[in-house]
Length: 127
Picture 1 (tube, rainbow, N blue to C red):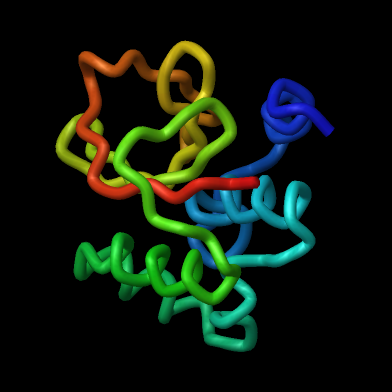
Picture 2 (picture 1 turned 90 degrees about the vertical axis):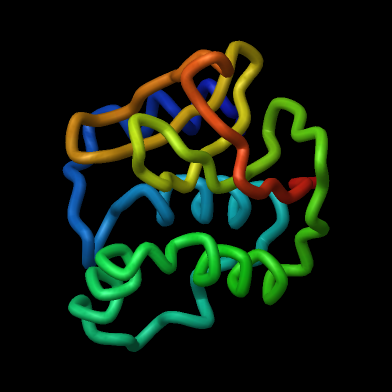
């Protein structure tokens, strides 16, 4: 599956903190590419736990832990297909690096954001 196909497949999904959310979007991409789910270490946690991580701005720590568990390597220069945590409009978001910027999924659906509007907080290479 290509990144474009993954993005198109996400377009009809509904955002839910305890379900398909900004972390699940890149995690699903990693699973498709590697067979490893970076969010599997959180399986079985109650939905409020996900909401609590986001409310306490702990998304970076949670996604970093998941990325390590999936064997992803942290990098400084992400390329198309890599995943990361970005800051956009004052919020941390888990995202996938696209050819024209970062791609993320939130309550408004899929967004592609130009680099000028984001800060890359952390990124991991997806083989």
